[in-house]
Amino acid sequence: MENCPKVMRPDTGQETVQYDSAAFPLYIVRSDLRSFPNCSADCHWHEDLEFIYIWEGCMTYYVNGSLVQLSPGEGIFVNAHQMHYGFSGNGEDCLFLCTLLNPALLSGNTYLEHLVRQVTEHPQWSFVHLTSETPWQREVLTLLPELYNCYVRKDSGFELMLEATYFQIIARLYSHRPPVYTGRRESVANNQLTALKAMLTVIQSRYAEPLSLAEIARAGHLSVSACCRLFQKYLSRTPIEFLTEVRLNQSCTLLESSELSMTQIAAQSGFCNSSYFSERFRRQYSCSPSEYRKRWALSDRRQTDPQTSEQ
Image (cartoon, rainbow, N blue to C red; front, side, top):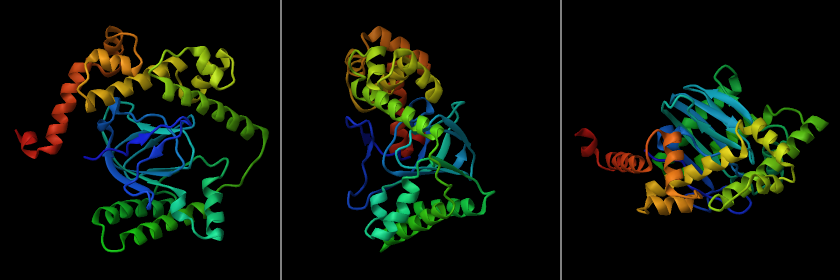
């Protein structure tokens, strides 16, 4: 089973997707939530358009403070630069398709670029919950698995077929885009999200260092109390709780991909000592870091060696 694309986090906080080819900026992957720590991806944002299609199981999808429940046969479109992530609230697995499309793939013609930007730069259109009940959304849901099949087969000219299919999807989004409002409520929400992204950027870039609540608030040009209200409003957790989650997720990556000691992993993940790291890890994942590493190694062997899984 493949995982979703690994990304870099530059100082801007925006994630940069690692495409198969920089000349053809898209990514299509079949994945499952159990391949993520605690069945949850990280909260992130990027310039790519994201489409999710659910094959089996259910997923809760977060976008800018809104939660969307996705069932088999449903999906979601997440616009560029929106904070988002998917997770399982009950720990059950979910098999899904994730496709990321950089708007640059749809550029090259000034007039068409103008039309595409009316979707990608729409100030109030952060996401669309795609269901089969709405005809045009049903058409998009039909096209998403076709993208995956075309990508996997890689027949001659598959790149042209992929781009043509993406244009079909964007055309449906363009035809059903909502009107643009420029009222005070929208302006306040945009300012709040900008401040929140700035604070998340500090957390994601400095999680390995000692980081105080005051420093996090300062990054968003807010008081500590306003900072805490904003985190609670959009993320339903405190800034320190979010910081701890980022550190724990980083520790999982190190446990999976390195042979570092627990003391080294604790330090590189931002925990003051290995005892506190183990305590928080067990509280989050219901196992010790060592147990997690063993389970991951066993799971990885089963995926790479079919004979192991049959024993």
